[in-house]
Image 1 (tube, rainbow, N blue to C red):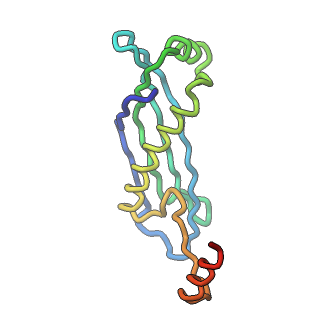
Image 2 (cartoon, one colour; image 1 turned 30 degrees about the vertical axis):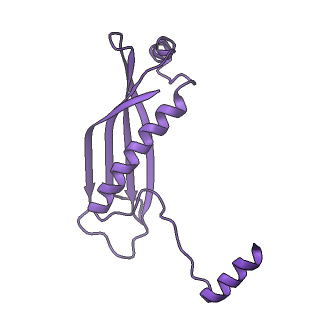
Length: 147
């Protein structure tokens, strides 16, 4: 169970001039870099690093956001998780999804805020509204018929 997190470092940069017609691509990556065990508190600390690289038309990097931190985990299987990491530098299957998802959620929220400040595109696609040719009265009548 995740009980806490800490962001320890954020780095961000952007090219000063980006041509308005530039098509920007975004590549995200999350990595667990280390696991520390604290016997006194019966916890594991999963260190993570999140990278978001923004590339332009010629695949040149026009921006980058890096978030580093740690996830604090507790549970009955701490010894097994830690041993798996020490032996193979891989996450134990019992925590892979939970730890990666938590670190990704934390990182994306921070990176989205920083991307906005740097005037880079959003890390995640925003929902889109599509205009319909129907008037609001026609839409309401159509919805009433469905009921």
